[in-house]
Amino acid sequence: MKLVETLVVRDDKEMLEAHLAFQLAMGVDLVIAAVARRNDDGVAEVIERYERDGVLRLVAVDGGSRADGDIRRELDRLAVAEHGADWVLGAEADELWLPRGESLPAILSFIPPRYSVVQALVRVFPPRPAADGQPFWERMTVRPSLLSPEAIAEPLERALRWVRRGTLVRDRATPVPLRAWYPIEVLRFPLRSVEQVVRRLEEGVHPPRSALEDAAAALHAGQRLAASWADVEVDADAEVRGLADGSLVVDERARQVLEALRASDTASGGTSLARAPSSRPTATPPPGIVEDATYAVECAAVGEVDLDLLWSHIAALEQHLALLEQRFWTRVQRRLERLVRR
Image (tube, rainbow, N blue to C red; front, side):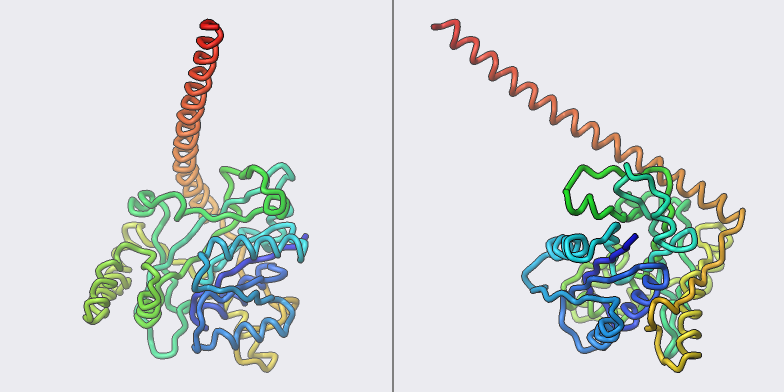
């Protein structure tokens, strides 16, 4: 089985390097990437390193005139048509896809052939204060619980992501999702530092959280971003309160994997996370009974939201069908009236 990831690069060197190292460690065979913006922050160096290893293909696109969705569809087509992808994983650069099992291919190999879409649960990590030189994955180890009221109120599309079969991409068939089971978790780190947010805002990229809308307005007004950023970061007091009331949970799995990759690379004489995928460890411990039980409750909560969304789609479809039927019978009636007049 071949697992190909498609990626539109808009992030910084630190995040991109961690993303690629993590994804390959979890079993991605090839990354097909397009750089949607030109920069000089080391992104090109990271991409070239992985190209030399033969695990990344860079596709040239005109990122200034094409929407990300159009670019993504082209990358998906290449993944299937030219690289024979059995599954296509459309990730964002600020995400780390973590299987609840041995590897991503091992998880996907259990999916019955009739299902063409596998859903993944998204975990969003808020920023935390950084020490000098400390990477994001060492400090961002606390996230909201999916069972907190704020998380439940989030739209479903923010809570779920998808992996698709290559046949679905190739044939453009009707997707058949595997529901009520989420064997993959997406660890997402959208906001990591003031500097990163400033770059995103200057590029015209809207903040992924409404809490930064005031920060965006302040930046465009020429004011400092620090005051608004302080409202977004999880400080020590907020962390203690959140862990006590269950709205926050400690999640160090990204740090465990990336620290293991960095340690392995250092032992072999390297200085970064980038290594050949065949030598990368999968350093995630198996979940315990308590964690599995909590995850089951979270999946049930998401499933209920999923069901509501499904019913809304069904209602919209029924309304559309009713409109079509009304038009059909109106045409039949008019035809009969013309025949009677004759």
